[in-house]
Image (tube, helix red, strand yellow):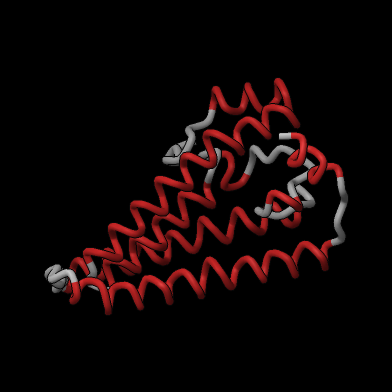
Length: 177
């Protein structure tokens, strides 16, 4: 926990924050979807898993998940960069507790968006194994958030974070605020 607090003390310029976020974006928006595509093409067939063979309605649902996921993820990233002078990366943590914008609806809008995005990709790939991988990635991410990030936020923001935590859902957004 001390390392996270130490990282959070350092201030970074907007150029550095944008550059670091773009590098991380390559992983999350390009490399992981490409990995899901590769895994879907190879492992579904090798494991003898059936193709989902989705209907037009399910295709549209998958596309909606992708677009909604991207919206939540990007909205939260932009808020972190501009309004909180940080990034989603723990080594360039926000300087301010965000409780407005997407963070008004849930404490982890970027994770919510990421799960929707990858689930939509899994559906569009018609891959059972890709959806299993998305479930595993999501589970590990939620464990990290609960075991590491929430403790770090409590240490940095104290009572303000605890009050926010009490009032705001963890992952599934409040629809009407």
